[in-house]
Amino acid sequence: MRLWRITGLAGTLQPEMEFNDSDPNGRKEAEESPFAKAMMKLPEEEMQERIMQLVPTVISNEHHRLHYLGKACQAWLSMNLPKDGNCRVEVIDTWEMTRDVVMERAHGRVRVELPGKEGMAVLVSKL
Image (cartoon, rainbow, N blue to C red):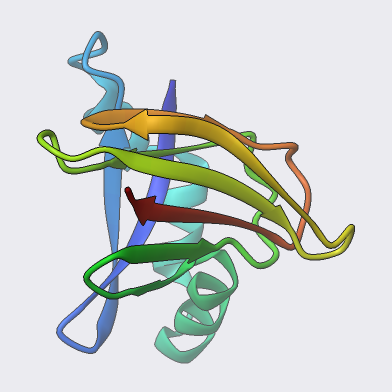
């Protein structure tokens, strides 16, 4: 599966593509995708505005990391956690006002399943 992940670098927003390791041709295919081509044709200001609608907000400190997904309706979120640490991962639904622990003692590369709707957040806490 291929997806787009947009990240902020040095105060600017630039596309970064993340791919399933089993698909070595994924990067070329994504660079040629209609979505990527359409985004790159937009005026800079409009492209930045649209990217901001897709970008998860990440707030972190030494013990916690919060990914707020905003309007993105993701089915899952993949992230790297410390390999030597144990973390609790919670999914927060800001519309339903619920908070569910989905992983205990998580570490390394994890995939958090999400309901695919707006207003979701993922909270990672070191144990």
